[in-house]
Length: 259
Length: 310
Image (tube, rainbow over all chains, first blue to last red; front, side):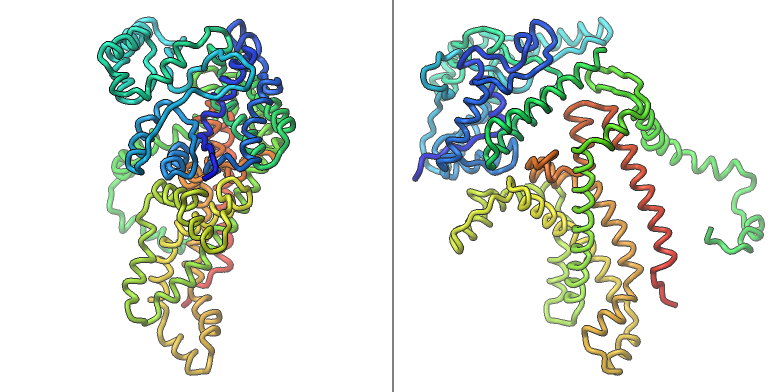
């Protein structure tokens, strides 16, 4: 069997951010990923962005790559992997449980590794992806304080640890990791340790803090579509140029809400 | 409009209610529910269409007709509208043709016809979400049953979900398949109610089976065909949502937009994924106009072309 890799489209956006931060500490957006001031531009034309697109293109050209064709198809990608049509599967940490079960049913042993980075670059770490909780600005103070109390309760050490065990999502507290370690969780679920180490070893910087933008889902879809175009034969530079134009327009449209 | 003139004169004599307040009182509960869940939101949508608004931020800025003009000038939205039109024409015409053919065959006096009819009606019982998931896994390029068969017979594995032409075709076929059962039920019932003496007379006069079908049965079926054309148009416009969301997520991207992104899916994307409520409301207003136009055409064509017998 040829060594093939399948990948969930959702991971592409994250992978691009990781790649950007992993290679040159490159941010996804200008203004320090939108953390110094409101972001106005994406860095989709950067060398680092081209690097990761070329990586996927090389895989595709050598027939090492497979996916269902549908963007963000978690179940379809898992099915390709657990049916042993590919050897590597790039997907969310929250999918370790499902894929372990699938591997057990199919009778093969599953391993977990860190995300790949280009040769000759320093590993800066990963950008957290996935669900997050926000409290809106324009709500009454009493309501906001209630929401804050609830958010703090939900993310307390104990609750975050059980949330992780239940879903595979990262806990947001180091104290939760300590609790899990004390409970012997990583001996019971050693595959989870890779992602934890990858996260805790991440070097804090605007790049690894992740992109702060109100046009997030739209930008992600634009990047996924550009990546799909590359897989279907569009040159990397052309696809990224178009993606940058579209993503910057989406960002400008979002920013216009504040005028 | 359709009532003969003398009915008005009889209304007073046959009146069930005394006074005008009573009937309104009985209508009130329904009107209240409609007002809260249909009319008021519709009016708010029309208002919102004139604003640049963001659902999450809660911001609103009056822009008048800018949302609508931007949509009409946007190459992406125009492509989505054209795709929707092609999708609608294909699913309605091919869907009705297949349904009529299958209903005609299933209505023949053959052994086991009851079972055929049952099987033909069965897909109607599936929810669009389940139908979409079934198709998604059948057409998974690596492990789907379709490519496994094609791979072993012809050594080909088509990319059903990211080749623009194939993906569009797949969604059309899936939508036709999902709609077949509904149409077949209506056609079967109508075929069974065709006047037997007229059909027999045609056969005795030496008409071939094809002539009986096209010259006698088909014209007699125009009322039901007419009804189905419009229900199918509405379903192509609005019910395509679940199928495209699950099967392709509107992709793959082709020229200016995802090739299986149809009007209602674009609206959902802008309203509930990108949170641009104003733009989404403007799209809803445009779709309202489209439905109004279709309804107008329904009555206009209906009066002229449909053969109601008698």
